[in-house]
Structure formats: C-alpha cells, structure tokens
Length: 253
Image (cartoon, rainbow, N blue to C red; front, side):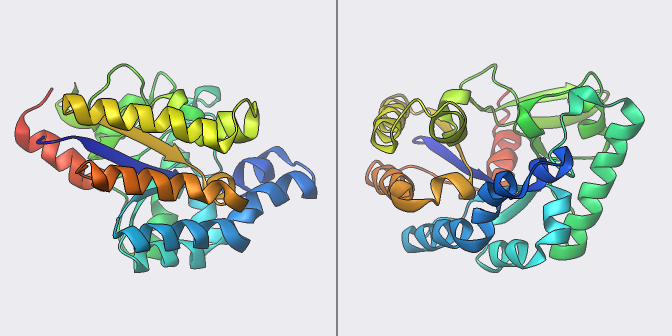
C-alpha cells in the first residue's frame, strides 16, 4: 500500500444493545440520538470531504431503522455486519452465534440488496467459534482484533480472511461516553498524532466512531478535523472491502 492508509469506520449501534438488555427509555435515548441527529451530521461531514466510509450495522438496526441504512448506502458508503442486537459473542454457544450471523446477514441483505462482505464483533469480543464462522460464511474481512498495526491475512480451514485491526485508543466510545476521560479536543490531539505518525512511516490507522457519540454537539468537529488533516497528508481512505481486496492483491500477510 503506497502512502498511508486511514480506515475510517462507524458502528451504527443505535439502541440495539440497550434493547437487548431491557434498559430504560433514557438509556435507550442515548443510542436513539444516532437516528434523530447523529448519523445525518456524520454523513454530511463525510460528503463534504468526499469520503466513502464503512458502517458496521447490527441486523436488528437494519430491520428497525431501514431508513438509516438506506441513507448510508445512498451516499456510497459500505454496510458491514455487527451482530444482530450487539450481542457479546463470547457468551453464546456455537448454534446461537451462528443464528446471530444468519439473522444479521439476512436483514442487511433485505435492506441493501447485498450480503455484507465485512464483519466486526460487537464489543470486539470473539468466541472460540467466531473465526471459523467468519471464514466458512465467506466474509472478505474482519475488523475486531488488536494484534498488529497493519492489515494482514488470516488463513483458516482453507479460507482467507483479511484482518483490519483496531485499537481501543482509536475508538471514540471509551473516551467520550463510557469512561469520559478525555475532552473532544484531547481526543483529537491524540488521533492527529497517530495520523501524523502513520503518514511519516507509510502506515495504517483505523479509527472507529459511533454516530450517537461523535455526532453529538461540537464533537462532530473532531471528525471534520481528522478528515482535513488526512487529506492534507495524502491519506488513502478506503472502504473496508476496498482495503481488504488491496491486501489480498498485494500478498501482505
């Protein structure tokens, strides 16, 4: 991969995890902000910068909020799988986990017309069966593991799956929502450092954001500033499937 790569992705969870847990209306409303305002703001910023990104969407979200998924695909972004109701796969037996994959794929295909090519485990947690299921169900790529700073190929049972690695430091949710340990400006500074480093080394950065988080208030300026910096430095900003095919074509492993 020439230059450096910024894999920009969004987890469109909305209120799936809260609904699964049976949480109260106020807790669910935090996720519903994605439907009412967050996603639209994210899509507008991406369009302003001419960037096509990847959205990981639970199947339940695709079924309950199909208008959100259609808004994503209408602007040329990729929709990938993210469980059915944001389940922790490591708490499921193999049969139940397989059912999660089947339901998610069915609902995404029903709304978009295409089966998802990529997968990201909710909470970035795999079970002992996840790799086998991802490989045998023919996914082009996964984006859940944290064991490298660049994409690579996993070979399992005769199947090749490209891994697009992630990192908790490069996710908006822990810093702005869960632990609330950084301000948006502090988060932006840290991420800009990562982008500058990748640009200096010809490397790879994977940033994960959530429309209900990064789209709230002035936080959207973080996304805008990241994209301006990436463009200044000549970043390649592929969708997940484009990046995965590039890795397979280059022979990286």
